[in-house]
Length: 140
Image (cartoon, rainbow, N blue to C red; front, top):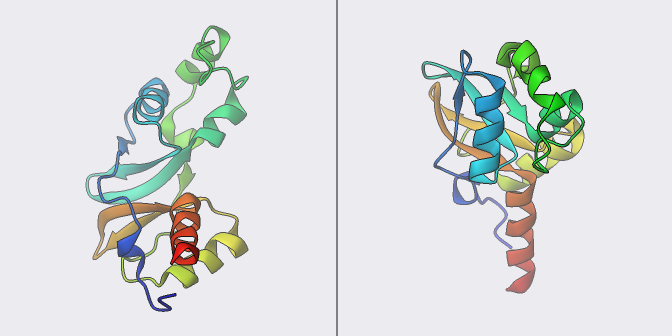
């Protein structure tokens, strides 16, 4: 097992983002269409928040991802991204060691972190990325 492997090897480099002025319906559509669970919220180049499927499901009856929109649509119209997102999310740099990232996920109970280098969003890394990496290590 490579002990000093940086997260740049496992992170997703093409990140789907939303703007703070978008509406929540757009965020739900991005989550659905891209089959992802987390979307960083940006203001220009700055990452100002993150929204997860879990955040959306807490607001709704969880039916949004099952194709049962209806009543949940009204909830999305009433709230803004700023009201739902986790503000000022913790970020990591692309040279963070995978083991250190795993410790952050375990201690902080995060499931995804934006990867930011020099103030610019470079990727996103998730617990799934870490688990896949460790499984690959066992396969060798």
